[in-house]
Structure formats: structure tokens, C-alpha cells
Image (cartoon, rainbow, N blue to C red; front, side):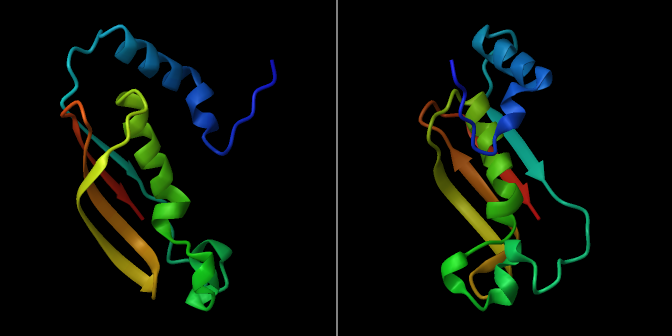
Length: 121
């Protein structure tokens, strides 16, 4: 077989594979709450950086920390929750430009009752 992967290649890393094994085998017991943070330690990128929507001049591009780094924080929560779709209980952002976040936080609830929090910047 052919494997097609879009950006979330970390799931094939041995550490991620071990996390999956531990969760599937119930070795960790019932997981009730998890926090995931992905912050890139740098000064705010230049206004010309495409990940930040070229200074907010093209709103159709969206962008920001949630799309650049936060997607990994959400994805690892879903990994532990066996792929279940969460509901957003609360969220907050700090905008860099209109419609483009510099940092974001969200509290999530999964259908099995597990809760999670993500932070990204």
C-alpha cells in the first residue's frame, strides 16, 4: 500500500505510536482530561509572512497560530480521544491582524466526556 499523509506525519513517529498503543490497550486507565500546547518561540513574524496572511491584507487566506501550530495541538487531543470530534466549550484569541490570530486557547469536550485544552501561539 500507498500511504497518503497530509501534514500530520508525527503520528508515524515511534513516540506517537507508543501513545496510540498505550491508549488502545487502556494501559493509562481512563483519560478524563488532556492539555496540548504548541507554541513557536519567536518574535511575531514579519507582516509579509504567508502564515500570517501577509499582514491581514487578504482575509480569504485566513491564517494565524491556530492554523499554523494549533492544528497539531487539536490533532493530538483527537489522537488520544480515538479520533472523536470535539465540541468547543470556550475559546479565546489574540488577533495579530483582523481575522488572523497571534495566539489562541480553547477548551474542548468529547462525546465520551473527556475534556481537553489547547494553547497555540
